[in-house]
Image (cartoon, rainbow, N blue to C red; front, side, top):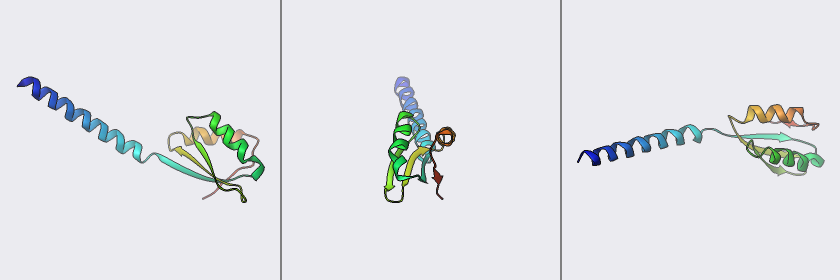
Length: 94
């Protein structure tokens, strides 16, 4: 019987850890809107793609040069620093 209690306690601990982990990561998504010259959209996408773990670029309005960068609150500071050093004229939108 003691073995069953230990197994049940371990399962409850694992479930609690999984729930805490889910909650903390659930609120970490960040969508950054930006405007960039149309001719540089593909270059921006390639730069960010090359940094694969930091974000994903999606074009939201090609005519206006508007993109959305999907990242996390934890990765954004590093990605923002890298993007600001690139030879691209990018405006972060509200």
